[in-house]
Length: 175
Image (cartoon, rainbow, N blue to C red; front, side, top):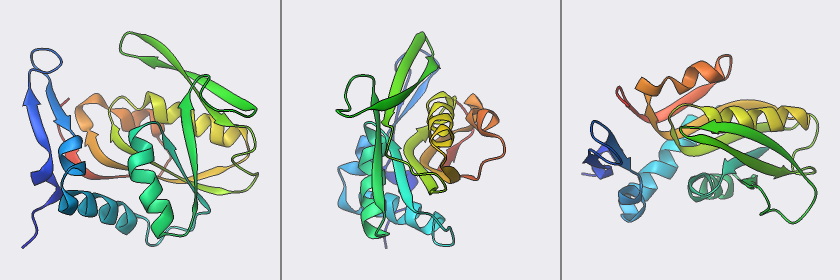
């Protein structure tokens, strides 16, 4: 009998600082069954969703978003750190725990009216995804679902994404 996806996650106490439990997604990736459970779990959450394209932020959104897009016969659009995409882009700045960062998407990556699913490994504070949603909507796309492998509910990322259809395979109540 196959294990549950939660059993593939290695939890590291007091990393990167005391009181934090780091949930390591790489332990899911390195096991064929864990990876299959994660991708299948994301696909299952999209089975009744009408969408045209999958968007994922670097780098773990690529890891989970590409196999979902492939299996669903959809295109994949990468969101990258500033300066990494070769064509004309739009960008969004978002807050990090210490400072801020800028992400970009190709200006022609999302067509007006396209239905978009965003996939990432983890929702914590929700800042990155909030910035991605803003760029997709600026390009005329409609975010129809946002899926995560893991959610740290204690960081209240869903509050930044009110009004959007959000789903996580695993939810941890803490931070």
